[in-house]
Amino acid sequence: MRLTVKERKKATAIVAPRYQKARKKDKGLILDEFTELTRYDRRYASHLLTTQGRKVWINETTVLQGDVRKRSHKRKAPIYDKEVLEALKKVWDIMDYICGKRLAPVLKETVIRLERFQEIRITDTARQKLFRISPATIDRLLAKERKKQQIKGLNTMKQAPKKKNAA
Image (cartoon, rainbow, N blue to C red):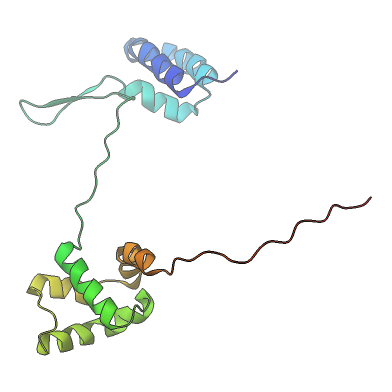
């Protein structure tokens, strides 16, 4: 029978202090027992047991304590802000909702023309971001808008009943 994730984490918390205090000869035996119990790879198990409960000093006042159970997920700050998205939507609308691959090559030229005729007003930073945006990013940013533009209707086609195989 396999252990659940919670049980593996509990086992790690229990075995780690014993592993960290043990001599090199004893660590091998403890590691063998632990890998047999949790079915972790030996190298990963060694890493878990070594880092569990370790303190890392960030500066003189801040200390982080290693815990297998806690993970932090850092999100990157978005490159393309609201201003860029609004300008992109406007250009996309004017260009008759074309895909990102077709919009990207003409985006620079279109934005310059729209600014010249005062159809759109954006800052220099937003303009520079629009000029270097990739087709995939255009499609990703406009995905919600594209979904709103889809035609919503009922499917009027009826599906024929399946015939039973007479065998």
